[in-house]
Image (cartoon, rainbow, N blue to C red):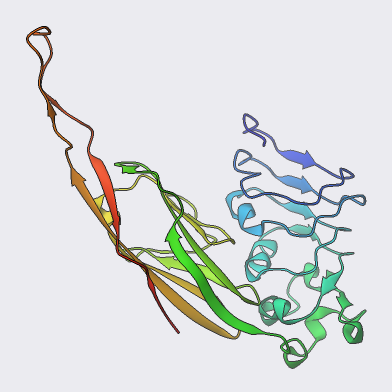
Length: 272
């Protein structure tokens, strides 16, 4: 959205009736230091907190007076790294979806006292950090991985991008972790060649033959965890040799660019 604004330092979006902030919105704003989403007229229900891990200079975040009801576990880690946070005046739903955030609360950061419950009725007006965990866990669900698949059918060339999707359900929303064939572990906080977002999109850039092998996706929340395995066989080969014709004696034999072929074993398997 903000392509070409790499030097942008402050962004004020208040009173724009925004309802959704899409993934990738802040990819081109690495210098952003002040994000104002106070928006008394806005209705933001969800926010891609994992996107903020790329904004290393961000020191102020204002999400006051929106329509957010829950926070993913990663949100606590992100908010605790920002100096000035305002997330008050949102209709927080204090149920199992907030257990992971509640577990991390120790009264260390001011934003912890800004989460006042609106629902359920018997917790209305109470601050989340003072609610006993057993009062939040009545509707918890262990994670289930719905699918772990390649995200597209585009052939992979050497140096290309591999897109995997590990979609999981559960209450609270499970955190996704993926282990690559190399043993590297990537999470939603990872930056660089391998990234994972809150929706389970796993992106591996600049692929090589070393990216061949077994990928393990782990979905975990406060009540359990599960995993699924996706195996690939990435092979380097040369499609052929092009020979110059008599009509073009100046041409030379040459090899095509190496092609990475992704052979996916049928299905994946999961475990508890």
